[in-house]
Image (tube, rainbow, N blue to C red; front, side, top):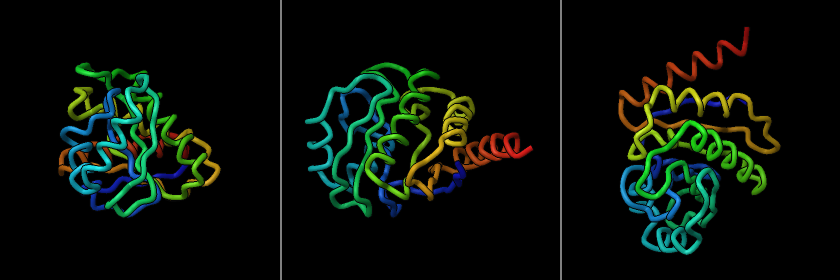
Length: 170
């Protein structure tokens, strides 16, 4: 599947689905979750927490409330008070894509799951995420954007994505 890498604040994006880098409790604290909570309003956090806890690597869906999206998919790439793993990042990414397709979504914005607060190395986590994105065969998704917030995050994700995508094109 083709995807692009963009830079910005996920809460300012417009898409059918915005993806929250969640912990298994689904409490929206800091980082991506905090940005989405601030943009979507307190009801978004309350709705998310009412659907938790969920298993590591699984996802839950809520309304997007005040965000410019139809849904937020909360992808649990990290355990409560723990660190993300390669397996949890891959599973959370795959389940996010499957759920977005199940919802009939055409556009999705996803952050580097497990790489911020969850403590996983950005380059290694980005590699896992990009490989899952690249290998996924969508039913409905046509516009998938991997988002980095800072210059460094964007540059790292762009380099990893370019490496994964060029390797497949050969």
